Length: 311
Image 1 (spheres, rainbow, N blue to C red):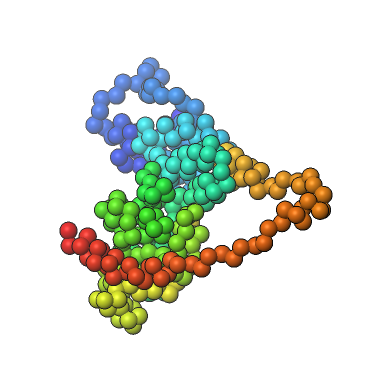
Image 2: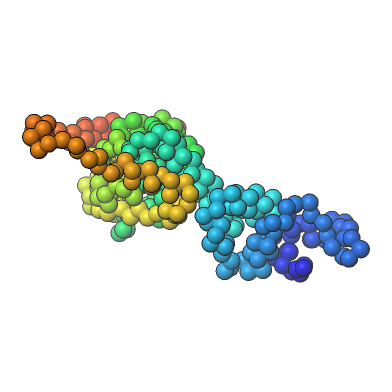
């Protein structure tokens, strides 16, 4: 049994509407109201309604995928999913990424999926006053959308997006810029990385902001920003993972086990002589070209960004 006060504690939900007095209800002979739903997880719903500020799910549900999915269905029905499990949709995206990576079976796919599933929700901003309010301390959530074979994170409100460009750089831009997938946006990281993992894996330095749209006016002037040289370096960017899958979540645990197996070095069943014969001289890595390429393209990117802004 419970009280009317508990059932109507959270407005705009199924139970609050049902017992608002606007509907004619017919209890049975014992005064019980019938709701045609599975009652297995109803206790969690009542416990949340009794104490919305400090309620926490049973820890066992965090690692039991079936129970968690069943509870999500019930919470959705009662209009409480976003309150009790606010990142459930992102968790399902993370699980899907991990399962696809396990099926692919490559080290790169597993590393990327693990990193991304740990960063389902991230918060970004400069560590010192630099960015405009539109880009300072903004939370981005992972989406089902992909651009250039990488997930897209959307800002709360859906007006800005983190995406990978065709040049394998991380950019923040509008919906149109994201859809193009080109090197165009308002903030970017200069590092070129074909094996993109997740936002927090990038160095804190290397971020750049474009013009007064993304940069505070005083900082933009002091950094030497001009019409012909519109990009300025952000001194340091803070990218924090706010929510992600735990390592003991079943899909994550399976991916980590598979990755550990791939990381194990196979034994070499051969003689020292044959090992020596197989050794090859080390090749020096090619010098990075991304910064030079970036400098050549920055004015062109600025013009494209202006065109997008004017549309």
